[in-house]
Length: 359
Image (cartoon, rainbow, N blue to C red; front, side):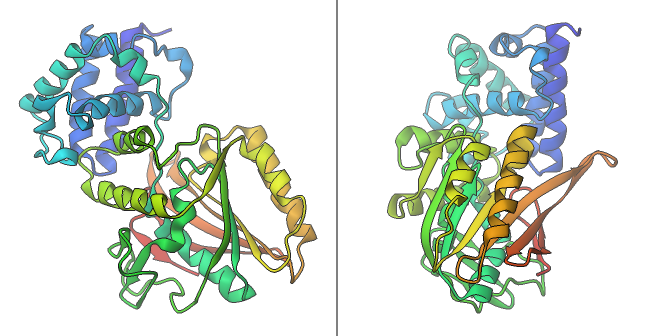
C-alpha cells in the first residue's frame, strides 16, 4: 500500500490533469501544487488525513470535495486573500506563486474545520446539460402530441427538471422564454439545432437522488455553488439562473436509489401524457445493481407502453475513453415505446457545451 501522502498526492495530481483538459487552469495549477504539499506533509495532507487510499477514489471525488470545501470558504467571505484569485467572487484567476500561497494559507488557517468540510458530498447539478437533452424532449412532444411527464434519476437538486423554463438559441432558431435567467445561446455547433419549432409542455416533474439538495435553501445554493470550479464563470452564470428558476418552479426530488424509486413510478401507465425517464452523467456513479434495476424497469414499462401511454428513455452518458485516456464527447440517446426505436440524437461536452445535434 502507498504511504498516505503518496496516495493523496496521486489523486490530487490526477484531478489536476482533468481540470486542465476541461479548461480550468486555476484548479489544475492549485491541485498540482497541493499534490506537492501533500507529499511534503504540509497542511493539505492534514486536511485530507481521513481520506485513505482504500476509498478507491479514482474518479476524483476526493480532490473535488477538497476544492469545494476551500471554495465554500471563499463564497462565505472567509478567505479574502484567496478570493482575489477566484473569478467566482470577482477575482482574477492565477495559478502562480501568489495564488498558491493564498490557497495554502487558507488551508492552514482553517485546518480544524476542513477535514469535516471535505466529507460533504460534491454535488454538481449541471443545468447546462439541458442544452443537450432539450432536443430529445422536443422529439417526444412532437411525435406523441402529448404533454410530458418527466422522471429524472440522479437528479441532485432537480435543476434539469426545469429545462422547459430555460432559453435555448442556435443559428437556426430558438426555444423557450427569452426572459429566462438561464440562457443557453452559445452551445450549439454551427448548422446544428434541435427541433426548436416544436411546442412542448411539462405536466408533471419528479426525480430522485441518493443525496438530494434543496435548491431553494441557502445551504443548498452554497453547496451547489461551491462545487462549481471557481474560474468557470459561465457555469456560475447558468447555475445562478437555474437557482432563480427553481424558486419559481416546484419540482420534487425524493431521497432514493434510482433502482428502487423508478419501478414504482413506472408500475402503472399514465394515460394522456408521454412519460420520459431521463438522466445525465448519473449511471457512472450508480452501482451495477442499481443500473440493472433501472434498465429492467424501463424495459418492462416500455413493453407495456401504448399509443395512449407512451414511454421514452432519454440519457446523456459516456464521456471517457479508457483506450485514449482522455475525455470524449458524451452521447445523448433516445429510446421510445411502443416500438423500442433507438436513436443517438446528440453529442455534448461534459458540462453541456458544445452540443452537436444529430437527431
